Length: 395
Image 1 (cartoon, helix red, strand yellow):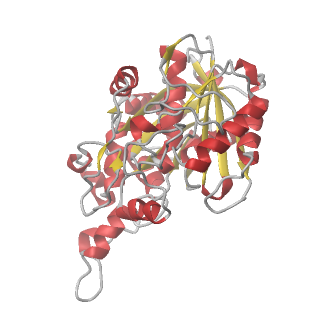
Image 2: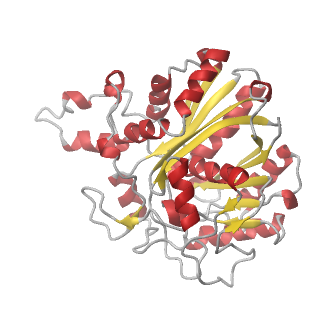
């Protein structure tokens, strides 16, 4: 398979749009900050996007007001993404372009806010009676409304693999002729349910996270939004990046713990490589799931060792951005794709000490090199795993 990527963008704590993201990665400047999220007293660090609360939605979208949709709108305006969508609409028609979004919690922050303001009659205040916001499809509905795209619209929620799986769905829809192109993406914003929920699972670190470090102590929650435009190759003859393969698995080993030998992760990676029709040794860089939790990082190295050799560069970028949950897939796909253009391969921030239990070498420092093939891993609760392979293409 080979589908053209014509534009992409990402907004996270590491920067709004590609230019800021690239600068943060190159300068090894983390976007994490001590927890200052309103109403949350947890001792942790978070990946908060500055200024989301100040984002003003257009009047025609105000009925979809929520922090999540404000973040989605902010990201939509970066890197000429909306212009690219408009140009594609003019060529193929709005009905031939799908919207496929990934999220973990959608606009649950708005729902929390609404419940805190229940009236004496136990009803939400009038401005917060938003049926299109208080449901899981809020991101898909919002992006379709914001872009004017009228093709099939779907919102995927499979925990941390959500916005990686959007690429797989887009590929299937395009290959079966349902659409000619798709705007894929993901958005997840900070909210109390997530912060306190992960704290109850004892997964939150009180310090900046240390992916793949021997002394890693848990994750930092972040928020992010990002997008990519995928189309049939003949519609984008000058595109320099292609989606080559995707792999999905659902090992269902445990509700929150990965299979101890990484079987689900390995299956997802193997399927992505098979669809890409390239050997594992051709992959130059893998953006790892790498959450900085004890079990997940260790298990991911087991899966890597089973499939790759030590020549493949592999690292996690979550110490720059925090774990963006349902938006992690699109954010890290953008980072993986961007290495094909920039040649900047980010190391693993905050990683200092090797863990003797690891079976695969993990990058520490950044590297500059030519990248022809990149990969990204996103592994979610319940064993929902997704891996993607991207490659350079020449018009």
